[in-house]
Amino acid sequence: MKYKIRKFEQNLIDISIPEKIFFLNDSKNLVLDLGCGEGEFILNLAKQDSNSHFIGIEIKYGRILKCLKSLAKLNLKNINFILGDATLILSQFVQKGSTKRFYINNPDPWPKDKHGKNRIINSVFLNHIFDLLSHKGDLVIKSDDLNYINLIRTEVQKSKFKITLDHNEKLPSTKFQTSYAKKRVPIHTVYSKKN
Ligand SMILES: C[S@@+](CC[C@H](N)C(=O)[O-])C[C@H]1O[C@@H](n2cnc3c(N)ncnc32)[C@H](O)[C@@H]1O
Image (cartoon, rainbow, N blue to C red; front, side, top):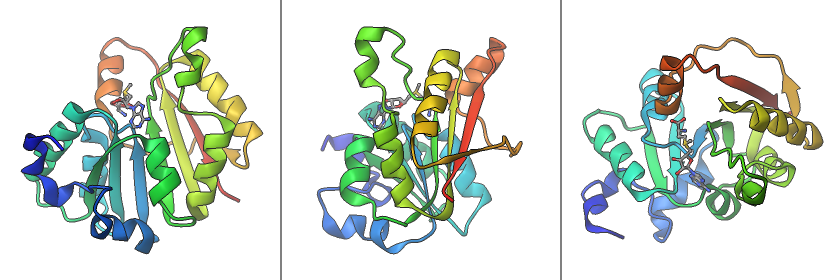
């Protein structure tokens, strides 16, 4: 692992160290943000809810470093970050029934057909998330990309999830959403629930 990130390792779950990942198996109160970017969304959630344990997963080193630097300025004990591929981490380290909510905010839409295989969301991935959720757990997906959100809705309908109505929950903004809001680009949300 690169040097800079080591300074913040108390808040980083290094998946190569078994003791670091224990509470991914222990907790029933996990909230996961997949592709958390620079972490502003999940850090704000963690400030508001000390009864849950928040984990941001992000594949880009520079972004995780920013998450960890922001976290170091806060006195929060209920949040960690993981550097890595969310698909792999979910399949190897997160236990069934352990998570009460997943957020996927503005997943990369990969608009060109030839790049479609890079999209993270499909019904197989969604069914895996479904199994990791606790009873009545839920999944919130947001995107500015109308084609992608329509595709996501179709994939959710093919999966074991039930789509629920937008419950107008006030959630913190993400970096991408803040920049879309400045350009007046609407954000679409798909809420779905287990059982
Ligand atoms: C469009 S950005 C959105 C970031 C943030 N959620 C937001 O709304 O501001 C998508 C993020 O997902 C991350 N990402 C893409 N594929 C990923 C994967 N397989 N595992 C973890 N993160 C991933 C990207 O590096 C990027 O930071």
